[in-house]
Image 1 (tube, rainbow, N blue to C red):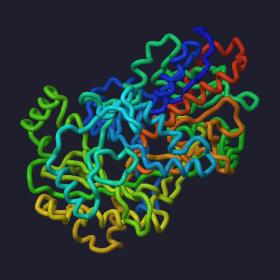
Image 2: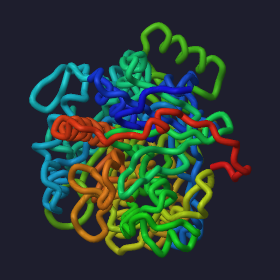
Image 3: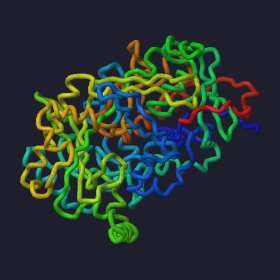
Length: 560
């Protein structure tokens, strides 16, 4: 099949990729190809907010990664779900709208990344947003990504908010209005009771454009490099290896785990690591796969004295029918809001500063995230340290592109991470003991009252802590020797190649990462288009490159 060459190729149809596909194809002069390894986002469990309990372990819609045994976590392999469908992790996540703190972005700028301070990125947050509360200096009302309130107040969340007030944490209506500290209800990425993923918000309005081509079930296997320039990509689809070329840029948006993996598979990364797997070194870039950061969540579980939790709604046929009718008739209730309704940001470490821990309050309890709810009324206080010092790595397991990379998180590797995590749990206990909650929370199931001192709490964190799904930082932007991209997200030493996803974060933001990734892609789109305007002559592509070439099916490889 012979077609005209593409201007831009986007590798990854996830949170960032869908934004890029929309913005870059808005100009009909640019031909855009987007590749997504997973299927289209047709599953009803994607679009029903509570459905992420079903997609958490879905064998098709989720990559289902595991870390290596973590020595700091009792040698456990930690499960890392990542979206494998259009919309990526925005199609399977907890829907929570949090931008992080202004200081997070000012810190990025202070590290030498001009144009990434809070004042620079706020317009992109606003541009992306359709807030049901309306617009203003800090919020948008015309963007594609819907951010909605939880309309119905919940007795348990109201008690948590009141209890936090007893501890000096004020109620807030907006975690994204400039002052993050406080307790209240999260806003969610939903639209009239449905999930508003990046695919729904950005790709649906653009997918019928004649200059945008979307290939699903198409997994990239390597970049095509010629004389120090990225000129295309190879990918597998329908059992065959295909090749596509780009006149202007190849853009990696495969996420913090697979963007560095694909760079290394293509010969871009730490030279010694590449040679160990028999990969020819195209460009020795030592920072690829380094600087891995993630939020570790520790889940405190309480038995509730009244049948007011989502556990109660889901344990009987009558309850399921009731909440189903509530959603069908009013697009509200548990099916419309997922699991975590309430949030809290506060400081638990000594000294001045911004909040250092975040709580997610769920009106549901289970032995693990995405697990079956307990048969009794229960709730979860999930606490995480916002700015961990611990750093991990992503490296290759082999030169096989269909084998998962090696992930080492190194959770709780530093004293401040250990101390902050323990203090966060102690704050959670103080909260549960306040007057508004004392009679509602009848028993601490986890950690349990046997965990009496700091050592026991740390032991619990090591034995049960898990990801809260925010791996980042593995292709960080900057100008230091370990930086992978510059401030315009161009890969150092390679022309025509950018990375646009969570991996470019030099430091992890203070909160959930979906909204920041959308912002990164919005800003990157402007930079890419500006560079295209300033360089009107695209690289010439050989006529043979206008063919997407099918090659024989490769030897079977282990599936990710």
